Image (cartoon, rainbow, N blue to C red; front, side):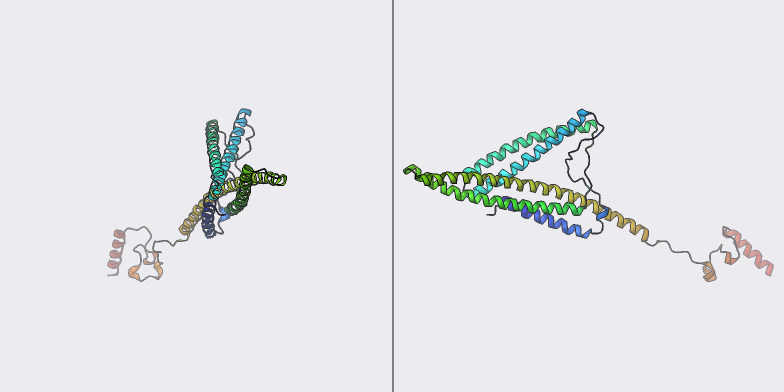
Length: 298
């Protein structure tokens, strides 16, 4: 079973990743000069040397951010489940998960608000968050590809469990219909109970895999954002290097000065030492000297 909600995101993410990988290949060989980006936008370490209340504030901010990510992942997972159940005609389960997704969205908004408040207070106190170890563009792209495939696989597994939920529910409905018109035999009661247990187990497994799929997709988006910023940094550095190279290698636009010794006499500089005159002598002085030389010869 392929659901448009999740598989559409996978196909879009796959196309986006392929486009960035292709662009990155053009910049191959420049990666070691890349402007690196922190691995995670939410580092978990505290800053040594600060007051304990400031460390407590930073730790609280990180905790709120973890909760925000958790509830956003559950919101996305429940939306995927709702769409999957709806595609199988299980409207009751679909509506239930849609309601749960709305509740997770409300909770996420609350954590987003307190996280922003902590960020503002940290900024006012001048507390800088600790950056993680720098990474390369290649590592971002590899992680993004891995997260996207995990998203796809987890969603596929979840879809299998949801199909089993639908199949088990058909069995349960048959037993419930029979129970309304007659007494079920001990064996039928046992099978009925087993079917109820299987339905609940499959629903739990489907929910767990959907949450994994949602978490993987959020990681994919984070890695792609970092990869795009790293690529932009590489592009700027490559352009700057090309400009600097051209400025050093471009030939001078000025016409090179010719050696007066190899020029015809009419093209020699008027103050050329070849003409027997010193550098820096004015034209008037040269003309007077030429007149005096002619008079002496006469």
